[in-house]
Image 1: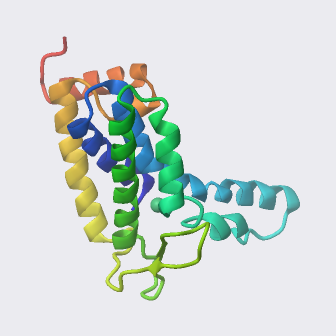
Image 2: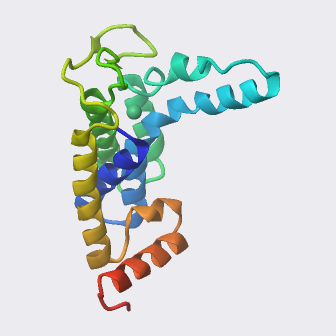
Length: 193
Ligand SMILES: [Zn+2]
């Protein structure tokens, strides 16, 4: 799934399971961070622009879905994030949950444009090569199933934002979130406090 879908989905889980803004953000972050292993694409693009050579997306291909899409990454990310939490152990377990929700969503819906272009989950990478999981009915990344799921999650997240006064935009900062929620409330004709 797309990073935005992971963000919204993880935020919904965090809203339902945490008791304060800090823990909510940490649990949401754990559901987004796995895709940080795709940042090699930035290195590839910059390297290609500097060298003038054709971009083969070497680092992206090498590390995306490898470094942070298995249990070693799940434990590492959850341990680091729990230290910033108010409720350490609760956040540790919830980070494991949203991290694994990310892996599950990728397993189900990360196929490339061609039919055989599966994207597997190598659950023990980068420590061990196996097990490697893939689902032969994996949805296309831009398939209608992914888009439908994302639309439902987004609708739920926007509804919650109007009701509760905070949204997934809080990951960018409180000020941005306040502006976003105020605009939403005006849009839905809800009273702005
Ligand atoms: Zn991913």
